[in-house]
Image 1 (tube, rainbow over the protein chains, first blue to last red):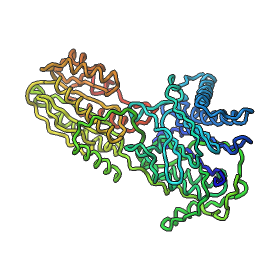
Image 2: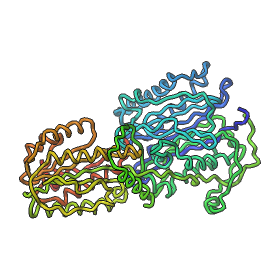
Image 3: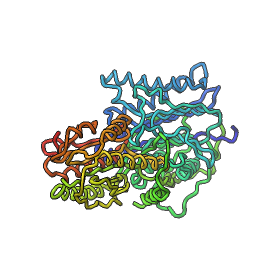
Image 4: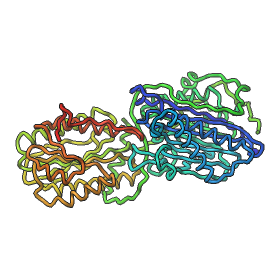
Length: 336
Length: 231
């Protein structure tokens, strides 16, 4: 592990233009916590959640889901017994999150479904990691130049359907896994960014999305999560370029522990760099334990994008010509 | 933990806008129109229907997202003819239908469902996400062919949520049979309000085509006092 550096991470949830237009709050949430134990060394815990649009308290649901996941992982890791990395552990974490939502619903005397949200969770230590997911969104792992989704986003039969932590049968859809390889770069994102960051046809992560953002993160050498990174990420998520492609809320969580890169200042974008220069305080950042949950920040303009479909039984009676036309038409979409 | 090399520390901020976006096709929202052009539609009904189709396209084009996401296929019956294969709204050319012969509704439904089946296969093959399809039938008559197997396909499709099927009866339509064909309550068109019908249909398609998981899709009630339909 000697070649690994401290984690640099950043996370933000930004309101989508559709919610902004309707005066609805951002229903995405995310959180990251770094801690360390004598047995495991540095531990990074990451969570992201997307609250359901039609659920009255889904913002609270999403925030509570992230906080509970972090708190539950931290308390287990800091307890006498180290985390036993089994899939039962993932189920336990999920149940804790669900319980917290059930309790919140009871406390507010509301149906559980009013707190509906998805959940992406990851716990990363030196040489292994645990992941869980319910619903859409994606966790992507990177290693220098290769990026892969841990799970493909869970959708229902149609693009506007997914699973939520609060579904009665949610446990049956929980995706979870434990890996025993070192994770050096990880991203979590909600469905608002899925169409931008995933390649649907081949079911892959879109490397040109992840490579540059991780490289930017790596130009930052100081471990932790400084405010300047957060504001740069928020600015990106609220940018017209993003909002032209998605009108949903969007969350991006990024963390890297690869060696720092020399900053490459794109010569062709001097204005972008200048507008964003916030000097940072080198020493104040070395946070040992940082926990934060964020939501929202405003934006203007534009149309949408979302998910995938999970059922597959291709029976292409359709001719190649139709097929080609469909794809041509698709490529034409981009121009608009 | 290792001390990172701080020599690279820069006073400049980090710029995440360097991300390049994936070029995925837009999700699709398929809509099959099954339109009766039997002889009894002759005159005002067929003219109003044609005007309604033009309105349908106009209204979808007014919504840049719907224009790219809603895909329309059109089968006329009287006799059965595939007038338009699936095309996005921006490429859809509203036809000029003329009233012709009988009312082979059963065959028209089977043809429409077959087109839909092929389209879904194509979506899956290309990894294109899609919304629940709508099949929308408009008739002023009684089927002149065998319709029970079509009714059976509709029941199966609705049960598996493969599509949503809607039937609209223009004056003279046999609502009893439509009731046996459609799981959902067939609607009766008020007068010749085809334009309002297609405005409603385009609004519904617009709502669906921009819906995201966990969101209710708002649809207007067409049977409200100023709506185009009655039960």
